[in-house]
Image (cartoon, rainbow, N blue to C red):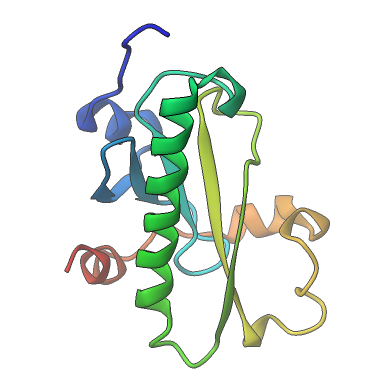
Amino acid sequence: MKDSKITLTEIEDERKAYVIKEYPSGFLLLADKQIVPVMCIFRAKIEVEDITDLTDEEYSNFARDFREALIYIKSKLLQDKNFVRLNWDKLDNELKKLHMWIIPRYKWEGDELSMPLWTHNMKERWEKAKSPSEELIQSFKN
């Protein structure tokens, strides 16, 4: 594996991302479009496209840090009485770099929105999505 790691500056330029926490193997970002509040991305520092491209040690580090990111986000969201759970997955074909989506689910989504996000009218939801507010960004940096 080549030692090619992305820097904080590069990650912020890449997707106009909002970096909220750095880990040894990756960055926790608030997604640039918030389809649901606190939708995040965990982006690997190592420049690979797929999790299968990691060595065993890199995978172990990535999995550990991703789990820590999930724990961090969940601890923040437990304060919201409408928070139900965190879903996570590797989605998106646009960014050809290893990243995982973290998608909070809420009671207010109701039955219609209780299905996976990709079963919704995503084009419409993406167009309506907003960038995270400065207040939201700052609340996760504390």
